[in-house]
Image 1 (tube, helix red, strand yellow):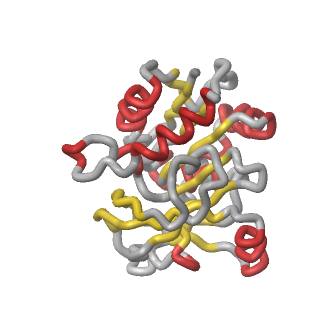
Image 2 (tube, one colour):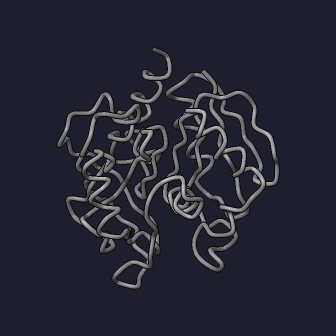
Length: 221
């Protein structure tokens, strides 16, 4: 089982992602620069958190047009699992690989604190080991995490069971308390909170491990 992490100018959670994937898989993930145009054969592609291109224009907007994203989109279409966290979620939205967009936090302030997520679906490789309604204690660290989509898009996601997580304690004003969403094919997940920073006791929570273990067990099946 092989994984890859895409690194953009301004990524800053890529090393956290490396440690979490190494713990889950026992293997070193491939590190792929955003300017590359090819990916090795992998089972999971991760877009980590950070501030790609300094968040100029819109968060994730420039990164969504990086050369590697054409290959990420092609692999996603082939069924490869793609997981975007925080800035990675913003990039997935801008690349239209998941529905919606991330706006400035309702408070207009950067928010960095623990939050509690509710698992809204277990019908995905990313949440298969969870229980529906299970609480996960993780952290958020973002200035543009206010999720928005049209009413029709949200209804479509609810009808298709694409909403992966909701906040119990919404930190940013996200519509419907939405913290993470899946694409229609259920192989692409975007989420604002950081499960990769909740996999060791020193993090204050190990609740993120269930997501990493879930996707790795699904891929190994």
